[in-house]
Length: 112
Length: 280
Image (cartoon, rainbow over all chains, first blue to last red; front, side, top):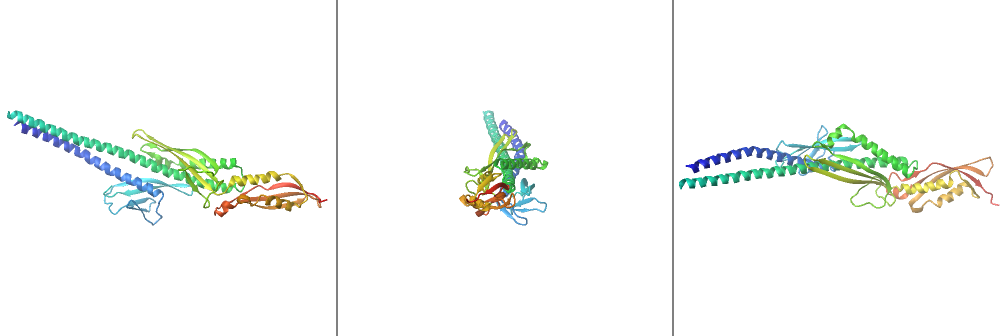
């Protein structure tokens, strides 16, 4: 009788531990996704420094196509970019003695 | 006996549960550790990317100032020290003006710590050899030659974030060159000035012929051509003594052939006295 009781208690404790860890794991998994998206954003922003698209043109970097938005920023997205996770990296452009700050918005795909 | 077996089973189950939960927690701890590392790496990536961005802007500022200043100063034939002084002060002034903008301060702020950079040196020098790894940009014409004029700047970058345990230091040297052999032309031009300025020259040749002979002994050597015009006025009517003014500039053929837009150095007009001696 005691073995069933102990096993049940241990099983309940185990289940509780797993359930409590699940939230933590979900949070960490989300954080991981965000980090990977930011990492991708950094990589694309770095590539863009020497390879900026002209107005109305597209540039492909890491399977992401980047183009200018009407508000003067750049958006990069891929065909598989189904998630709404975005990463924003800022780059500076030097033109005619002036510095412009450009936001590079990367819409991450499932891989993000 | 039965209770003893049950007790053993319970202990075994408990051990298995402890091992399973520990494994789960170890996995989570490893996961957290990996994420922390990734976060550090991400900060370093951002710092490195911003450093490259800033370095590129600094190089553009230097290139622009260097070209503009040489274009302006070559029309006055100014000395090496003056050229160096003006380029340095303009570069420092413009850099400070640009980076003091408040909106750029937020760009330099990464995870509550500021990415810092400072200009260590600004030199203006002749091109001899460029060390491997230095960033060299030819900003006028297609090619540079020995004794071409270059502007060299050294920028140091530093980022320290104790909270994340991220430390970054980088040193960049930028060299912007134009094919014009400014200092060589400057030396030749100032030797001409030194020889003539306010001097009294006595010679049987007419002053124009004397200058032509003198200039042709210099012009054409090592890709440097002297272009000039001379005007002489007799001191008294009918006198053999003249006050002459020589207006000249030097052309660097290497720079010109390299399609450079700045290929000549102009010098101030030189006044000298000339006495034509009679042949007898």
